[in-house]
Length: 94
Image (cartoon, rainbow, N blue to C red; front, side):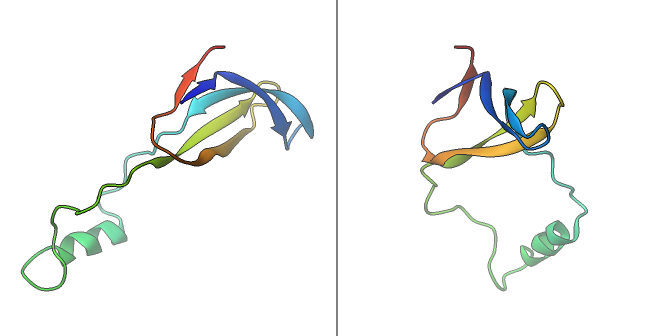
């Protein structure tokens, strides 16, 4: 799915429609020593409970998220594009 590099949309800080730069959202690296990760790794040891294995079903698509940055005040906001898209989002010039 193609998406423009710049769009004119509402900026909550400027309180009006302004041009925004569009950037594809990418999740940061998760912390390996976070409590949830340590707890999950501990549950995968041994034979009890659920263990690591291959997933039976692969998801068909993913909700694509973009970060909009206002060109005037540099306020950033997130926006989800569509519901579930089967193709990856491409940010391209018009």
